[in-house]
Length: 84
Image (tube, rainbow, N blue to C red):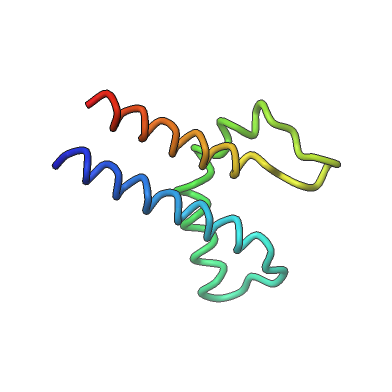
């Protein structure tokens, strides 16, 4: 039961990271879009910054750290599921 809840929370957090990354492609952020972006930044950036320290952007522009962060999150949850 606890593992099921943990898996769902990881799934929701993964989706939040995905939406946050997609929102970074929106050039104009005004009004409620700006508010959503700010909230998602406060939720996702602490975790993503762990990976941004070690993974520089490719070509100075393409940030692959969210991809690695999502893979790491899914990998950790699968290991925990396997152990428990």
